[in-house]
Length: 325
Image (cartoon, rainbow, N blue to C red):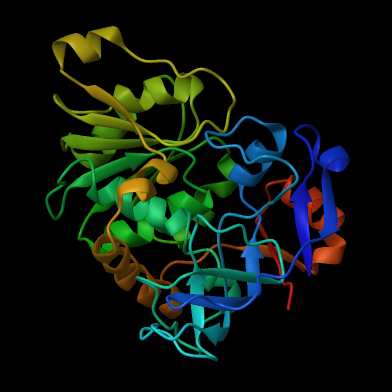
């Protein structure tokens, strides 16, 4: 069985290899074996390869943090899936390989008429977006959420999920050429980042109070978001795409009681119940199947073409998907 693995930490061109690995074998009583159909490349994968992620496996280790596939074998106690069902691969199971095996607890059969590549991307970005909107602040229906990096896959999911929850979004981008793109996927307000952001947001929203801000950029962009928050608002940092330390306002923290929180799906997953996981994906799967949540895919590759796949994904122009089977 083939798998794309990291054999040391460093430059992807030097440390990522296609290796032969032992097959997963037969399922245990509560397990399923799944033939991987689609597994995306995420920014998190690049951070793991570089040795800069919150969790680092011991090389050689198979990469990939999400995906989807067909059940090819089930254990005797499995009732929620059967052979032939398409299902999500848990984000704890490395997916850049031909087959995986895992305990089938919260998983459901996925709709066959949905785009398999879009389904493969539910596990990380839409899940993160859902939890950012539901786990930190109870924003009332009709209320506003503000986010930067608004043309990213996670931010696009935030826009769609916010609409499903009756919320409106202020979306901040760093390039003029993506403004219309973000508007086309449903962003209510789309603005360019800048030090005067708070004034422009207040004008566009009619000075509506904003209690939740989502930062994936870092640097001064985090400060710009913080300045848009109402008293007792919450800034949630979930990525650091700029690579710069985030900036914040001590005055906002002290006098407006604005708080700063961090979010990592890996931490949430450690304590998430089967009920919480099932409930989240029951909300997300129909949205992906209907096209309400989607991310642009710019390439699909066999495992054997991993070098080209990783090179294209590193340009961050859209999602790249492995299609092992």
